[in-house]
Image (cartoon, rainbow, N blue to C red; front, side):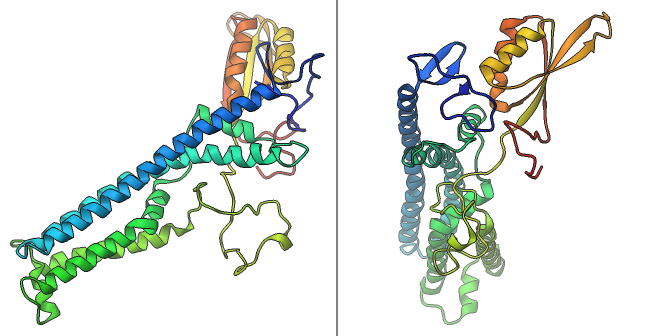
Length: 359
């Protein structure tokens, strides 16, 4: 699939559209006009927004479960003095399970939110600023996300964000309720030592159980603070500062935050590949690669080790989203060809990264 009108300036030559036709995309002879492409993008955008909303509602549902079960456990605990504190501790375990479930749902939400944000910033926003010029790699980034979807944030970041946003307050209520239950029931305690003693669970000493609870709260506090440095979530409201002059970036106290790099989506480079095509029809295959994929190819000389037959080898640099088109093209032109696809550490030059870019 090759882009025409909105093609990046560094992606090779672009053929002029046919008379009376204004195609944006071509694929195996099919042409998609600008209006048709925009309509498809609008429907795709609506679908991704709906999908993100569904997972956002699932996040709220999990939080509601945690709040409702905590309220029920506390109400039950203060009406059963003998083992009310045990019920509160069991509820703490249940809330932790809800946190794990919600973190997993948050990662799925971020997956769909990443696509929505990518279309908002690189397609729809670009339409509002003439001349229409999307980011050069936005379509490749979106296509790669569709072909090989990956969670955009780590599990640690998802847990940390949900913990800081909602669950830290639920845990605070649980901890205070547990101490209040031990202090007040069955009658007000006269000392803190008596409160700790009441925390016993059967033959399990109260001091040991209180120590475990204290370590648990210290652990979640350290985890919540330790994950503050992760900022991969595209659903967060963060401004984009990349590419702006230093004078235009707000300073700390004026909307900026010290030590935090604001951005709107992942800046990882899409996977680059190097392909070798052993074929008996090098001219035909190379011509179709140039014409249909807007990619260049280098012809190398090869010789079969077993047959001793001279064969041409085409070397072509691609991105991961172009492999399927190359396979179909080569197979259609020469069914006896042999194609090797290998990852490349870095590809510099026209159509890829500029020479001044870091590897």
